[in-house]
Length: 352
Image (tube, rainbow, N blue to C red; front, side, top):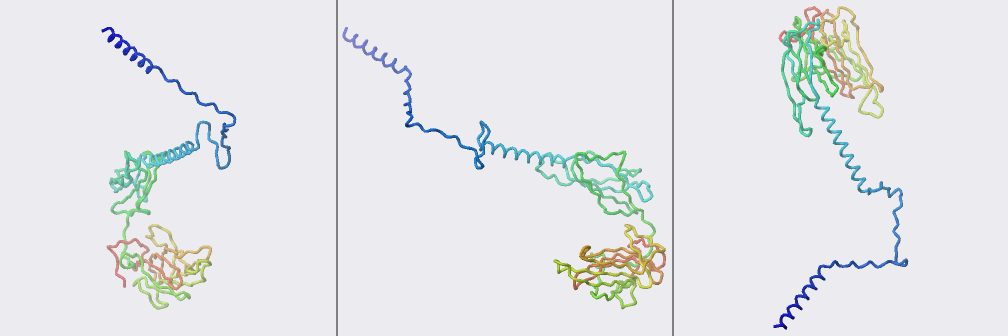
């Protein structure tokens, strides 16, 4: 019995010893010390044109990433700023008047603008609004946002002047005030006379006539709109081709002369050429197109007085191209004698 007790005590003692040894931390093995014969010096990279020096604590890769990030942020800020500038208040105040500075009430005003969007990556499209001028001729647009605003004006009994559509480009600094509205002038239509209207066919507003290159005249009747024999026309156009333009052999210099046989003409740039002048008519109009002032076409607008005393107006376009020169014409003639040249399509007289 005593032997068994002794054996048990010995086994328990061994177990305690092994447990205690397992709990002790292991000692790290010291690294062998390098001798001078085995040490290798570490060299820092030298700066040079192919090896930029990075700031302390920054690698060249990190600097490049920061530069790319800064560039992306700048582009994003520019894009957002551009979007903000295209998304500004579109408040507008206008007034409609006639050529006598009288307010026009009931004029139709059409607005069109790019719609507001809270997302700069989404095109919100176009929005429109139709309104009318009040008894004082005033109208306005308020509470909308965008950048571009187009305005159309019209009223029965009035002409809408050029350009017909007025465009306004807004920025954050654009301001219109109700105390100083933008003024639009419509011209009141007068009493039109029956006129002979010579025009093109189909969608063309002008009629075409060929031109000789050697100065031989092309004569046209303003009563029939047809080319006629020399000496019988109301309008004569003479064209003379020149030499090729240096470095541009497909173009030429040229000369042109326009005349009203037995009558005269007056050039005008009026938007409403409705009243021919009493005097000031010239025998002809001519021009030369050279290298320094070259143009392939010349536009002219004339008041004309024919040999029989009739008055009219002519829109002319001369096209100076090699071997195919021609002119285009639209005319209005009052065969009754008065100088009134306002045109009403409902009063058109048939060509003779």
